[in-house]
Image (cartoon, rainbow, N blue to C red; front, top):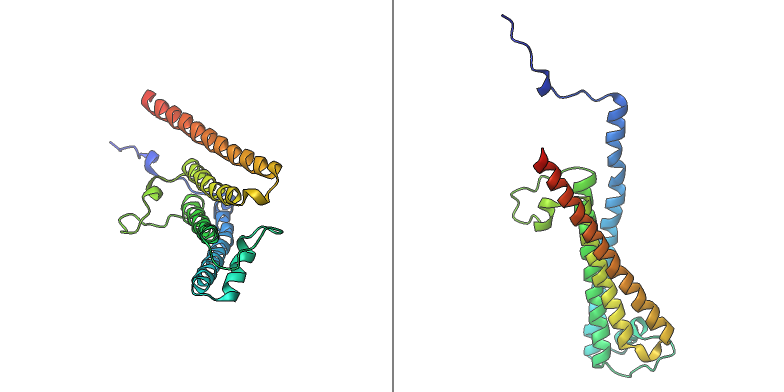
Length: 205
């Protein structure tokens, strides 16, 4: 008696059109390579700012001028030497660069892993903890949290120089930051609802 073949285990063959559509994901490769170049620019900018900070601390006039040009609001009084407020603004700027760099890493690594190709990092000692369960929703939530951190630093820098800004500028930046907060909460809540719905659907089946 002939045993019927179990065709359920045979993989379905992709049509040429499906292959082309699926391969189109590699068109994103230049985008991620471009973000890597942007990361290099941020690293260079970080070291330039750090070099100027160290030079200004050692009394270099040109370094101090570069720092004040970067952190001082136009028409605001400029100190003639490095002070605590200037150091704080420069350090906040360095932290801002680091957080944007972290944001770039999330987009580059997480986006490539999610939308282009697996990186086969399972078992690698440097595998990011968040990458093991990353998906589009998790990536959006982490990006929203990173943007809130960056917005917080910019808002803090504005408040430090509050005397040089008009009240409407302070209010506008505060409102924008609050919009970022509400958006992040909405994204996280939506993701929670979707996760709960998927878990309930699997439980029913």
